[in-house]
Length: 133
Image (cartoon, rainbow, N blue to C red; front, side, top):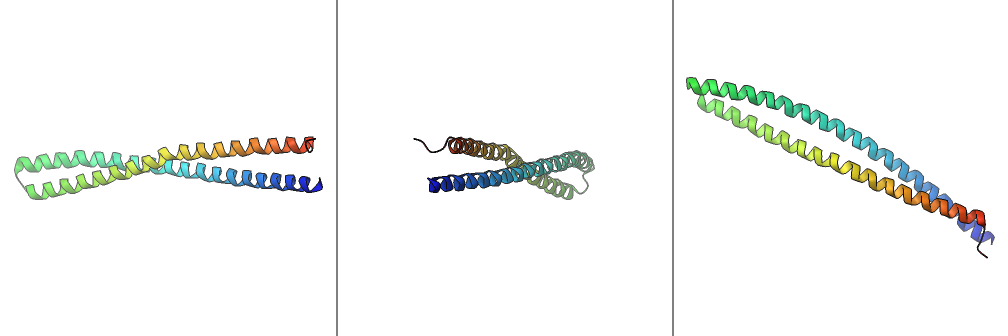
């Protein structure tokens, strides 16, 4: 009988530790999610700046094409800016994927936490009732 009580207490202690661990992980996930949101905002700002630069480049290219001066240089500059825009888009896409996966991770950890809390309550109730007759 005393051995069963010790086993039950050990299980309860392990469950409490597991809950603390999951709560810590949940906090870490929430911090990561906030960091990803900040990164997304910075990337959006970069993309917005790039859009302004593209407009300036388009205007510059039109002027250069109209005067037929340095056509090759304007084209190379435009292509390099286009490559930068593509790179910024890829970075934004990757950040978006990370941001979208953040809530799924958070939901999974919360589900685990709920499962452990239910099991802990069940074990505590079972411990209060004593061993089954």
